[in-house]
Amino acid sequence: MKFLFFTDTHIRGNNPRSRKDIFVETLYLKFQEILDYINNNGIDYVLFGGDLFDRPDISLSVAQRFIELLNNFPKPIYMVLGNHDIYGQNPTTVNRTILGILQTLGIIKVLDNEPVILKTLNKTIKITGSSYKYDIDIDKNKEKYISKKEEVDYLIHIVHGMLMEKEFIKEVPHTLIDELVFNTEADITLCGHYHNGFGIKKIDNKYFVNPGALVRINNSLSEINRMPSFAVIDIDDNINIYIEKLASALKGEDVIDRDIVKLEEQKEVTFNKIIQSVSSYGSYQFISLEKIIEEIATRENIPEDVKKEAIIRLERSQISLSEKEVVD
Ligand SMILES: [Mn+2]
Image 1 (cartoon, protein in one colour):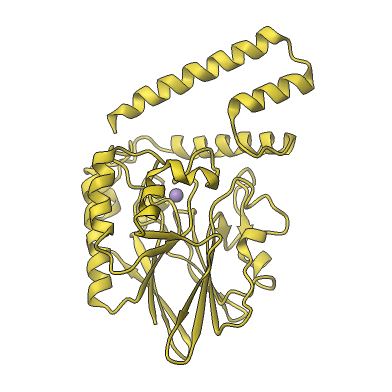
Image 2 (cartoon, rainbow, N blue to C red):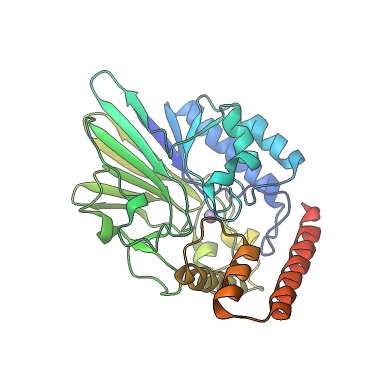
């Protein structure tokens, strides 16, 4: 049985600041190449690692084009949700997103609560998955990364989280492969979220795979030098995994502008600092910023006018953000 795994496509109508090409056209070509590969190489199932869309509410015209293409995939895509697919990093918001529509149409299947069992002539393969959640890498037990085998021959687990092969910037919560090896029973852990990827790692007879994002969004040197890739997993009496580079991808320097350097990376670090400090303050079911302000103000005895001012400023920035996004 042959699987194709790809991740982090970030479909959007407008251009990331660092791209010199027309991003949406490049993306469309990449999806077409994936579809051709599926049809020409005997791929039985397609697996996806999250962040299909760059935002949960991309414009309908862009969504329509890609839905038409995804609808030509021979079977539903088994996937997990990335932080970009949903609102407020909260998987329960999926029914308000474009992805929710794909789910209703049966074009995708989200694995979280519904593992899939596939059978070949003499083997059984189970596929499980964990969508992104804001505490996925903060959780000490790394629960979302761990899957249990039970009565099957092979277990594949898909996760959208910051799985790394070695220690990373400490402000960015992450999980090391070493923390999972002896806890998960998955033969293959497929991962999205860390766009650089780490290829294929085999430890203690278990595979950990992140082929990297299918698109290059930021302009770091490592992204410019990286060629977008996907993974092929071939399972019969044993497991064979390999990485394929996208033929349609151009050289990094032809599509990425180096000028707006570091800014994006710095933003990511700051954002994670905020998320971390907020979540260490209390446990919040929904990340509604207004509620968080409310709660902190009560606990810290912050004067009413200061609290109101904070909420007004928040509203103002939300409005100006949504006005910018009309470009999409
Ligand atoms: Mn992503």
